[in-house]
Amino acid sequence: MSPDLRLALGSNIGDREGHLADARDLIAAILMQEMDASPVEETVAIGPPQGPYLNQVLRGISRLQDPLELLDECQKAERMLGRKRGERWGPRIIDIDILTLGTVQQHLPGLVLPHPRIRERMFVLSPWAKLEPDFQIPPGQETVQQLLDQLRSQQLEESSR
Image (cartoon, rainbow, N blue to C red):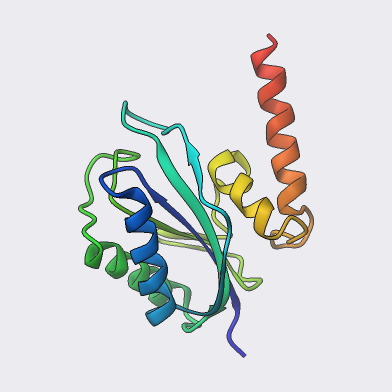
């Protein structure tokens, strides 16, 4: 049986909604079956000055078992959709990040699963919590909603200082 897959999508250049729709179509064709999508949310960009992002989380059944092959296919999909790699955290037509692949926990060159920055990314946790708030991030300790609540609480504390 193929593992459950969660992907994060983001776009902040051009027709952002169109880019997300194109990414969903391509992902459904080559990477994921039985796909569900979170609502799309607009967020402020992290990194250098740039326009706001539209973000979304997808869940489904991976067509690929090997994490590195999956990463390679996600990067190919980004290129097919017009992404050109440039400045780290810079503007982009499309960004496709692997959040989780089943219960896989790996540290490979260029790929860490689950995604190492899930806990600090409101732009991932917020739409994801609308899709599946009770999903437990491997190794199965905290849910998406718990991580979102912790991040909101942390940001509230920091803003009140």
